[in-house]
Image 1 (cartoon, helix red, strand yellow):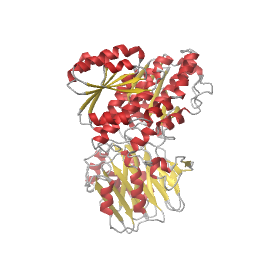
Image 2: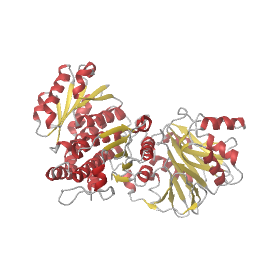
Image 3: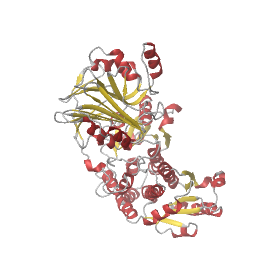
Length: 608
């Protein structure tokens, strides 16, 4: 969730550091800072947005050719200048930036204080430069090795030493860290977008590795100090993919990118005759799939909602029982994973700390793990037994949109793949679903071709402080995602309920003119859903309904209706979520919210 950048070479470091930090703003942050090295260490940091740091730097002269930078999202200690990174030791000889959590920082801090070290922040990170000061004997690499042997927890850290101005030393454990390779200059970042303007040649560090970065080159060492010949990873993304392309916000751009990324995620995974799903990346044998007797899906936030859709479609198509867990609960409830169980983990970034911990718990209990993720060579992708990549490309806005719909697509592919092998659906039915799935991007395009009515609805309801989403079956799982989108970017209190639960308490919250978004795309449940809509309408609620084209009876009970193209009912989740994304977006804009960087939230949650 925090961001790290670094540079060493022949150019002025400060502009490169600031530029890199801007590319990482999507991760969420509350303060920012840089440290440069020339004739000693110089640190500049500010609370709030990066522009405040730029204002602080304006007019100041720097000639440094090496530096590190950081954007912080508060975990230990409130947002403040003292708590902002970079952090230094007592004498200003060492400076560190760090993503992650040092779990044993309290005893380390107490021990260091007994040694005479003075602390100025509330952070766990500050123990790192003080440990460097304690261990340093003239070699920064050795000191870093001693420090990481002393600490417990997750870290991506970068360190500078005033006495060794020709290097940056970095280390990684459970938090992503990437080295960018240049000509007589090299770069450091916690995520690829910060590097794309300068290089596509990268080294992706693994847990336990240390890298020594100089202008002349990079050396990587393993846990035992042995030098490692790392394979260069070439980034294929276009730099302009991370730009807004004329859209007002990244979120809107990413909503409109969904037709393309849906096609990308399906490409090569459907047979030419639409008769079968082709998942060559999955090495599970037909016998293993047939012998699977239970599936666990675990994820966080929006990915968790994708998992709920996955439960519905896997159970319906492949006739396998599925449990869905929030990843932060999964390993602590001591799940019963028996032989024949399969675990699916879902993460946009592939670095989500709780999901990674759930993956490791599944492995500890002997289960095979399939990962659904958007980031090639991420931690989750590397540690899972099987990976289905969602080709959503970089997602900059904190609120996930295109990553979610590609996760849904991956769930459908997996469910149909299992159904075909297990023989739980007739071939004609599988072909019918696959044919509709191949055309689903066109359905999304048709929704995006006419958004004026959704924007008008959003303007009408933007002043509300509460909203409710209801649905049955598959619609309920999508209602939860719609509710999350609205509250996370517009700050409107929103809740999603199974429509059949209205009489069990929820109706007490329905008051005059409160907006209720009612999803009604399932033909088999339409009559019951209309009855539920009447219940809230009778209490004075204002109804916005989502329905498939042709379900005109919904107009009798709703003030406003958004129709989505007709499609196989099991596939409606990909279509119905798009108007909900747009509704949330336009309401947030109407309320003047910071759409791409909502308060208190981060893009990639890399700590528990």
